[in-house]
Image 1 (cartoon, rainbow, N blue to C red):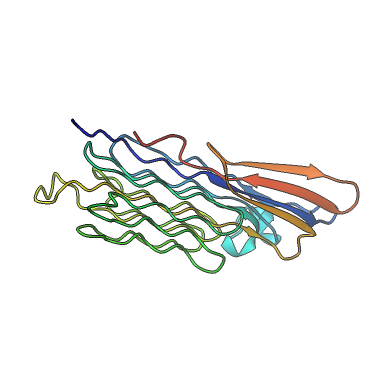
Image 2: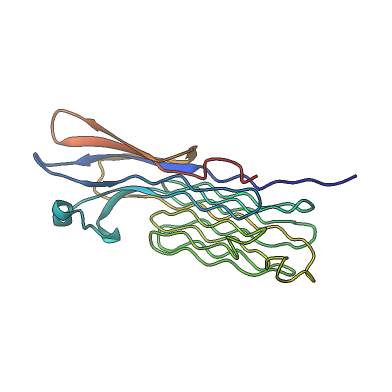
Length: 239
């Protein structure tokens, strides 16, 4: 009997809805997150975050991360797979806190998935486990890189977000270090979302969107606009 596993499953993107007071003629910078990539044996990239930015920087489309008023986090990338082991899945992105990715090969290698992004910090990098290497932590706006993400059986990257998810733990490319037993890559954590405190009403969702992100703006009479963001995810199983 031969075991056969393909890449893990990516995390889904998050959702952030808010009713935000606006003034006549006010403009916003809108950034739509792209879907992450996936492949058969390599670690997947995390999904991009979708956001809306405000302030004088909008006129020149030069707004930085501090100008974000609404963010939906992207899903974490899936771990790459060998043919004998079990890769980790990416964590879901959110309009609040992201979800951690799952580890790989729980009965043997015990390599940890990346942590979900939070409201005040990036997700922790996935742990090294029995014979692996830790992933990079998420940072403000960006997901951490999974260990050896572009190598065989690499770990998934964290999803982007208000704070990014951590990259999954992994092991060295077996073609460079054949003395190691097969251990698949762990999944990256999902990115977090954010809603400005000035919002009159809000809703957050976790793990609701796949594919490229989208931004939906609905106008109302008066001075409020309801804006819905569904962020992106790796588009398919990495296998």
